[in-house]
Image (tube, rainbow, N blue to C red):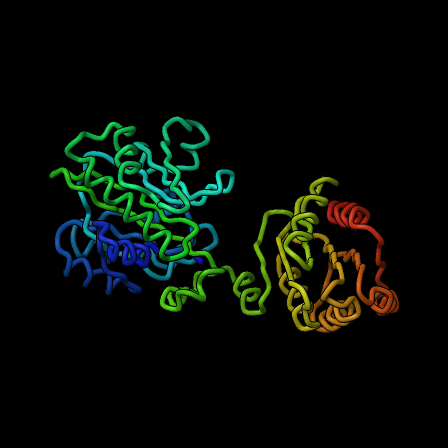
Length: 378
């Protein structure tokens, strides 16, 4: 679950990280009042779950309240990567000497949490990692001991930070790590972490992504979800209990089981196609959930064909077939559907689908090949 910048800053602040606190505004008038309250020069920042806000014009400076109101009127309502800006953060404009990057994420290859830092702060860190990987320094936390103080100091020294500033930097690195662990986050990031003119550290931009699977342990954090800024299809899937991630391809996938979903996506790519989504209806899915999955996939305008790949273990083949037929009575589907249905009560399910005019294939490879070919024809 993505958090807005102001929400992440609030959490980081609880851990002692010096953040640039601001005021959230939903209207230009509120932005003017916020700037009046803060005084001086301010920065107005779009609050959306999308990167590239600065390049899109969603972050602007304002000299005073009147200008803040004018800037907010231009930012509010604008589209950034398909997301509409419905609120802005008005914060003091901070003068600084240097920018750094500081982030915490899980390193799946190392099977450990890694704390990363770079002198190339304030820019797209993915681009830095791709073009200048040597510009990023890393320290892996011990699974039992955590991220230790000497590791945080070593990060600072490897960045060339002066000795009198190392203690402050190390403290922030450890506080960020602790926030990441305590909140069951999948990402905690400060970009940029700046050194101000008076040689103090401050987090100018805070970012945090929480692991949805850990939210049951954090009801207070779960309440921070912003439904207005979620992808509508991902929101519908979440409410239906379906694991769904939208991708950029053209073959829509309806699959039961995360492993089978990944294998299906691999098969699609093997035959020259691109999956339009990851979708797992889970084990023991009801007809209603299958119907919801079909509605979600069909709603994606990029989908040119649909591959239904079901292995009936707990999920019964006839239940899946009933769900598909039920959904097709409600949803108009204008793209070809290829179905592979094997396992529990597969014969009953196939009979239902074939009676309705569908062709059910035997293997995943055949299903993927047909779905890819159909997508290319559309």
